[in-house]
Each structure stands twice: as C-alpha cells, then as structure tokens.
Length: 313
Picture 1 (cartoon, rainbow, N blue to C red):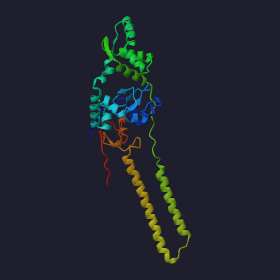
Picture 2: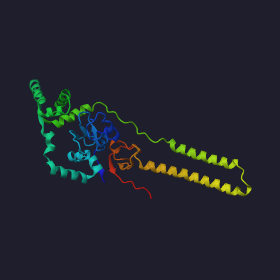
Picture 3: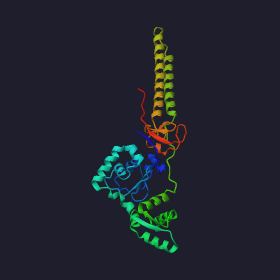
Picture 4: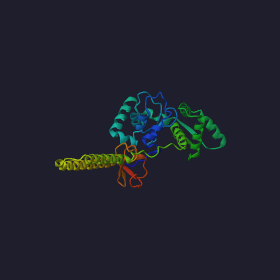
C-alpha cells in the first residue's frame, strides 16, 4: 500500500478492454492469449509478436510457448509501477532471483549493446553512414522482427534530427522505440464510455411490485368477505403492503451499495484506488491509470493511492 507518483507511458491503453482489442492480428500460433497478455499490462504493437507495457513502456518480443506474461514482465521491467501494484514487490524479487540463477544478468543487455553510430556531418558522410547503418547487425535484427526498411530509415532520420552531437551511439532498442512512436501517430481506436446498467431496471421492478400489489387489492375487493373475517382480511392486506415496502427499500439499499463498491468506469471490478488530492475512491486498478480527472468531482488527479474498501457490518 502506497502512493503512486508514476504515470502511464501510453494512457490510451490503460483500459483493459482497449489492450485486448489491440490483439486483432495477434499470431494464432501464440500460446499466450490476448486476455492474459492484456491483464499483464501488454498491448500488441502490430508486428510479429512485439508487445509493449502501457505503463512502463517496456517492449517484449520472441514469446515462446510456456512464457508467462507476468513473469516476463517482472524479469525485464522490474521497476514498472503497474507490475508492482498488481503483483507485489515480493513477486518481482522472486522472479529476479530465479532469472539471475538461470542465465545471469548478461542477456538483458542484448538489445542495448547492439549499437550503431549515426553521423550528421555533411551530405556525403551522411549518405555513407546511412548505408553502413542499414547493413549493421542492429538493423538486421530489427528487420527480422518484421519491420520494413522504409520504417527503419524513417526512424533513423527522426533520430538524426534530434541528435545533440555530430555523432551518437544509438541502440537497436532506441530505433524500435522511435518506430513504435511513429506508428502511434495514427490515432488509436478507443473504447467509448462504459455501458452501464439501465436505470429503468429498478423502476421496472418497482412497477411490477406495484402492479402485483394493485392486483392483490383488486382480488381482495372483488370477493366479498364474510363479515366475521373482515378484520383478518384487512390485516393481511396491511402485512402485504409492509412487505412490498420493505422489499423496495432493500432493493434500493442494495443498488446504492453496489454503486459505492463498483468502479465508476468499467462498472465491473471493485473500487480499489483513491485519487489525490480529492480523496475519492472511484476506480479499480485497471481503470485508474487512464484517469486524468476524478470521475466524481472532475478535479485533476495528482497521484493515486492503493486503498482497501471496508464495508459496514
């Protein structure tokens, strides 16, 4: 339990349903299901089996049969706040310990160590450097992932335009980051407002109860009762009125309690995150990272806090 000061790198994928919808073209041969991947925070980048965490921005590819999305997330991106919030620091530490025992820490640097030198000095040297870059091991690795040469060149040109020096070492991972950002420039399809339970459900129930009550009165009134049983009939009608009133009250109380404990966004999971500074308990863990404003008071969210909802006994 603690205050989370981090914000998601890709807030448009903070909603679980949006992440699941990104797996439309996910390879059918993959053993990892779109839901399992999305629950672990990953959305599909659209190429090969390349995925990315919506919160920390970390990307993973080359998924093998039996790979657990949560375990791989904890193995490669141990500082992800979403991961720590959902699985706990103990889980992350355990995965890190096992990974160190199996293959050490050297493999983590594979992408970062595959570097190329990009130069921005002079047209001739730039052209020669670009040819060398396109033949480099780093670019070859990216091509094997399914990215076209045009996308790779566009990413390299983007990197060159932002270099602070004439020459700079750039890793394959950094090129992938830029390629993904270029792909993200096309607006993503967002899930609209969550469907809510129609308010007329309770009204329909109440109407049915009232109709039953009226029918009961008509039945009682249509059959003349013997004079000796008149008081008993009135008592029965009064008892039915009390029962129906209590039933309506219980349904309203149940509906109110349900509204309090359900996430105001997905209306499915229980609330578990309190927004700061307003303090409203309004969202579940999955929906909270997507919120810029509190859905209750519309105040901007500065941070959010893991909370435990205690219901009255």
